[in-house]
Amino acid sequence: MKMDIIIVDDERHGVAALRNLIQQHCLHFIGKIHTASNIDDAILIFSNNNINIAFLDIQLSKGTGFDIAKKLPPTCKIVFVTAFAEHALTAIKHQAFDYLLKPIDPKELINCIERCAVLESQQKEQFLTIKSKGITVPVLQDAIMYLKAKGPYSEIYTRDGNMYTTSQTLKDIQEKLSSYFIRTHKSYLINSNFIEGYNQKHVFLKNNLCFNISRLGLQQLQQYYGS
Image 1: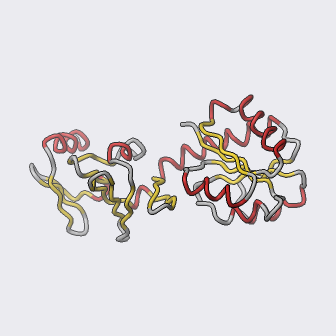
Image 2: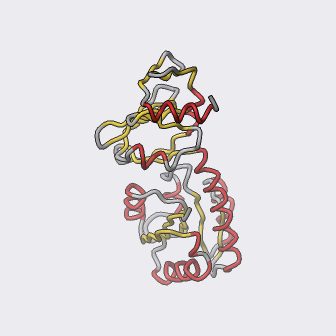
Image 3: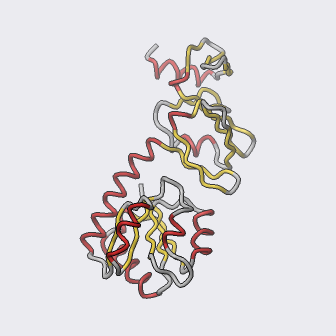
């Protein structure tokens, strides 16, 4: 899976230098490369995209990279890029994934992105990242009980009673979910960890939940449980 990134730097040559290094050495890991020169533009990009890695210059013309870091979701890896080593301690306090000094050593950049790729793969198995009401929300997959198709949208129901609505279809979401989610009906995706039993027509979940299942859904259940 390729990762989408953003480079935030108010100096054009800083953006260009980092972009060139990434394109030369790490392009097989990278999808879209977004750029911004100020905090407002950066936040707008974050609100409309799922960014995996944020390369943040610390000293901007207005504000700092730390101001941006405070607003980012926990699934985004923050890499501070600066010419000043003295900010390292503050970067750690802002949950920095890495800290790269300018001029950037290509080997350090490669190492950083490779570690991000490993962590991203692990996080993909743990979280479902969705857009809900204009906000990026990382939802722990283990906490999802079931997902329901609702017209052009999907509703995600968690064990703690929360419900999230996203414009993604169940088919699109299923590609991002772990294998323990079962399509029991055209309108439902069920987390098998919450299934208490099933028969020819219904699947029974914890919390006294009951849903219809289709013929194909029954086959999926039987295949999953080896029955």
